[in-house]
Length: 318
Image (cartoon, rainbow, N blue to C red; front, side, top):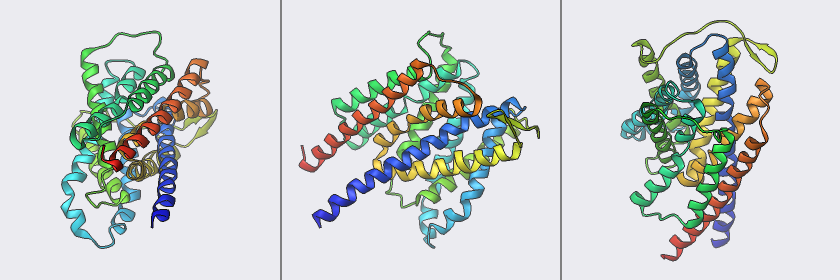
């Protein structure tokens, strides 16, 4: 039995890391794809709402089938699905849109991507999972890397309203990691993703209809890697890959790695975005950004070592 557990844990870790990296790469692809649509005349709100609703449509049937007839699990967790869609999906997106209206995109992203620290504090205060010095050290290294990748070393001014919106996006991202990793509700990853995206998509659609989020769409082709891509191809890839695949893999990863480690691995999204921007938009990364990507990966490794110490401490009862 002990050998069984020893084999299963590394396997669960490996699959969790793989799923987390697929998720972060999928999320990272969304920026370059969306930029092609924005340049073609789409508004950010319209592109993201279409992305979320397409993902919900793709996952709806698989999400229901994943329940295997356990409809009581669905009815018992309606509140979880609505909260996940409202805060982790729609709320995070709306807050980020508003934040970039008051500050540079890089600064807004930097604030939003401090969400792993919030996850660490939540797990400490709520679940008594005290982080180690290695966890804090890894967080600091990753934070420096994030600053370098986002190219914020030149400094910039901060708008208080923009900061508040960015903090809202950070809270939404933290909720995403915490709820995604929670297996106690019994919701399969497919079901949680489908229900959350459906609720979030409907909220974003309503926000657009009442004018909170500007909606503009065109049928002009997007330009990616110097090639003309039909608008519907970009939208479908945004929905299927950067939302459906990204959310399902992210939830599955969170349940294998735990919310803290999964959140830090999720920081590799900015590295993926950098690579895709290079490949699809011709935006060659600077040396400082490449160095920042290396620091983010190093920070994740240090956090993982800290998680190992937390696990050993929990097993020994210390």
